[in-house]
Amino acid sequence: MRASVNRLLSILVVCCLLPLLLTGCGEKKRAHVDVPPPPLIEPQTPQAPSNDTPRHDVHGNPASTEAQPETAQSANEEDTDQESTTENEDKDVPSLPAGTKPILVETGLASWYGAPYHNRRGSNGEIYNMNAMTAAHRTLPLGSIIRVTNVKTGHSATVRVTDRGPFIKGRILDLSLAAAKKVDVWQPGTSTVRVEVLQAARSLDQGGRWAVQIGAFHEEGSANELVSQLSRRYHSAKVLSFSSPVGDWWISVRVKNDDRKRAEEVAHDSQTPQGSIFLVRLD
Image (cartoon, rainbow, N blue to C red; front, side, top):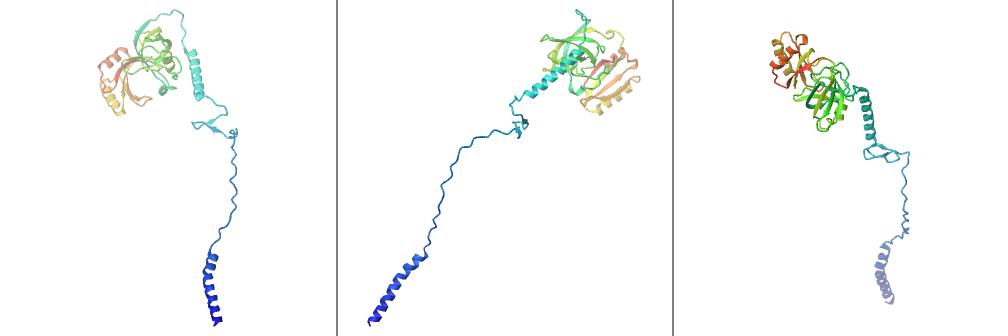
């Protein structure tokens, strides 16, 4: 009897202790990790750029190791252009005796012409140089020497007539770029000037070879249509169309013997749907 009671007590004790043992075995132990302290961050001294690696400025161009003004290159280019222009001016400025008096004076609107005509052959057969002291006039003999004075500023320059123009109604003179800068015509584009003929290459009143120029036309077909009309009307004249460096079209009417009186009659009696009609001296 006593043995049975002891066995029962033993079973009860085991049953009570078993859940505690299972709970202890099932609990996971947390691993202990030794985490080292964060490394100390030392301040870094900025390094100077190496000369072996090219720098780039804000324009994307390689920069030198020494800072230079952004306008240095353009200033140098301008100096070069000015030196070139000055050399051309000194070489091309006509020389006349002191006190030379003008033989003809006219006042009107002047303009200037440059890049599209630069390095192209002018009316006198020479290659046009916009950096030389020259001008274009419709009726003065080629090779004449004139003094051009800006009426507003008083600045003047002596130039040689080498070309024909301007072919815009209301203008009397086209200056080269260099001459336009001298007499303050370059920036405004046009200015009122006084033209004094100091030396005429030929007689101003008599002789000469003359023609008529008509235009400008936007399309070649319009120019050719008028060419046909003028050819039927003036049988002895040579009428042809040609294009300019800027892409427009013009008509030239060469009368018999290049006679001035006949050319004046053609200019007076002709009409054009586009542009204007100009009397032009050829020599």
